[in-house]
Length: 445
Image 1 (cartoon, rainbow, N blue to C red):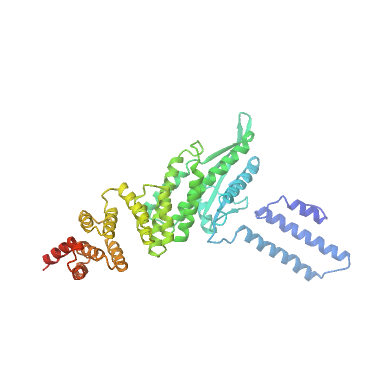
Image 2: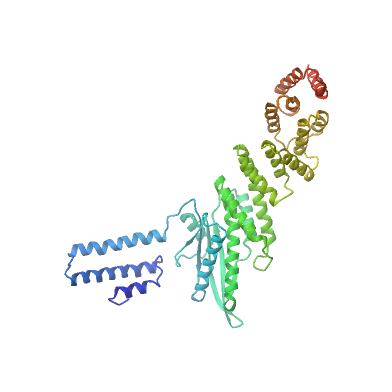
């Protein structure tokens, strides 16, 4: 850099990585040299600066440069952005491969429309790690969600230059109990079984695509699983977005040496999505967001046609939304999956009440022997709300009373049956229910 031509200095700086410690030293010297040259040029054209002003200019530029360098190196992160960073220590021969891997990784993030949620952070090349403990401490301090780190080994295979990437993954997740933490890490290890990838010079184009693709797959799985541990709906929604993209990626994926446990990862991805969808259905139902609940119940059925709970939830949602045929369809599907289970039997009995087939409805309710897996209070409240909509169907008053006496609030149940008898007024259409209500009430006197 021994030159008095400012343009030559700038050209030489282009090949130096500024955020590294070496880069800071070289750029500091270059800034000083450029500043001094400009001051000398000004002096030659008759603009002389005083010694104090020169000192302030030179010192101020160095301070500003140092602050900018520190901010660039120790970046301020946005906690709402999911940051993935790379810190692989490479030898000269594999440096271009490493740049290409990161480039392809970014391209795939964009191709799968994840760029709004996931940002890839470029770390200085002198930020390297030799153990997991220091890598984990770094990501916690910097707010990085997932760090791809490791090193490369150079060699020859059949006289062809060969680079081996030795990759490790460090990640952030919610604080868990010791047992749950070990289970969680075991799930992650299921996806990250392969730690080494090779790039042969003669087939580098193909091998680089494979390496970047594999790193993307295991990164998405790990990131999605980590987000799912955080008890916030917005993070769960991001986890779902990531897992849905991963599922699409793996759909056409063939089993090979690069992903030896592909089927296990596919199954685990579906399982995590299924659990997330089930939670969101309950969340949106509690929030009275029927469209949201219906959307995720549909997604749960889409990935598992035999998802019993999803069909049960969909039956109720479709009924509330006024789609009675769809409600009946999903009730039949749930019954087909688990014949005799109390939940679809409650639904079947409800449809019989709606159709005023009271004798068969009562028989169905009496066949229910166990309601431990059922929120019976929710069932009763649902029936009571339906009676408020259809006051002319007294079966919807009788059944909540009957269920309250059997399983819940007996005092309320007695009052409901007494009200039923008064309103039914010996109407023959309710004869079976009148007889049952009279028998129950007489036995309590």
